[in-house]
Length: 222
Image 1 (cartoon, one colour):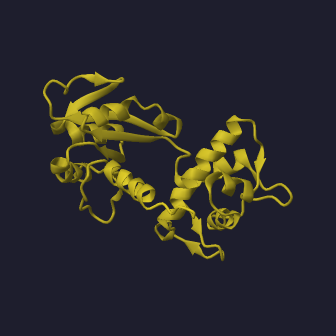
Image 2: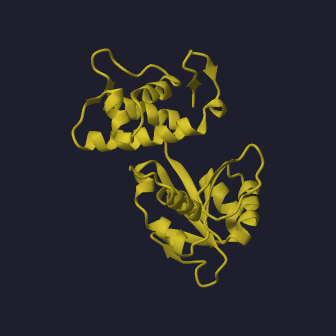
């Protein structure tokens, strides 16, 4: 994606703060909901209010990638959706693979939201003999011995790891060796990957700990 500083200095995508990229995804979801409800335009203050952030933050985030607003109009929702999808790289289809089809893996395979955002899980892998060779939600499950072959066959660039923590690093190494460029890791462990491979960790227990902290330490008015 082509990124720009708010002062119009050209940046590479690696220079964009992760927090900004995360907010782009939030803007995209909210805009999609708004369009589905019939909205045509929205202001930065309206969008910020919906997401609990300031209008200045919305403008600052978007200006890092260009000028998308229109004087007297604000943002055209459909137009901004197109631009954000282009920036995020989801204006094209991504083939995804998953390693580990236990309870979490199966739940993710059943989730229909991936396809609507441009992600298609085309293959899954496991080591359990009673699972290998089957199909879950129409997605074939292969043995790990076929991982490199299947990834090359489908041109897969993204992988999801949904195996126990003890197996996650070995699986990640296999994915990297097979040419996977980006990994979403659901295992509760920190992975060591080469610099050229992008990594996002999703630790559900950590998320619960964060919300527990917020509730336990909530300030009460007197």
